[in-house]
View 1: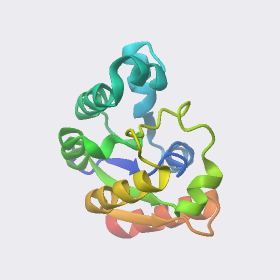
View 2: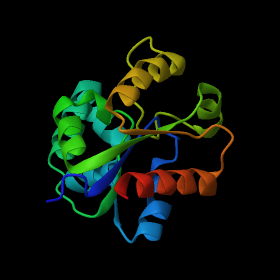
View 3: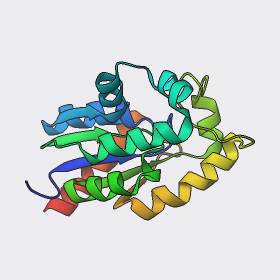
Length: 171
């Protein structure tokens, strides 16, 4: 398998990984994989149900295992926001694809997110959304091969910028 055959999208919930991923996949003639949906298909449970039954740590272990076992080609992969906590998953995703961090500001994040529990967002006891944002930002930046700052951009502009960067890297 070509090691940079896939495009892996990481970022906070609400950053548009699935939306950008679908549009990019269509434009580039790639398949689209949403790793949260793969988790739900393999377990038969919604993300928040897994968290309720197995706790945050159990969910993260499951997420790590499933993402570390994703074997796809010619795909855009939208990951869950907490995938970056799984060392095996991130090592595997970096091996099979180019990792793109879709970066949104904290202010934009709070506008976009609805009920974070229903979205399957894992918040540790006593942790605020701001704490989570700051904690994850360091991981996203560490793992990213490319960072797209979404500030002030609509979906089309984000996809166009990413497509331009990918074309430059591949030429």
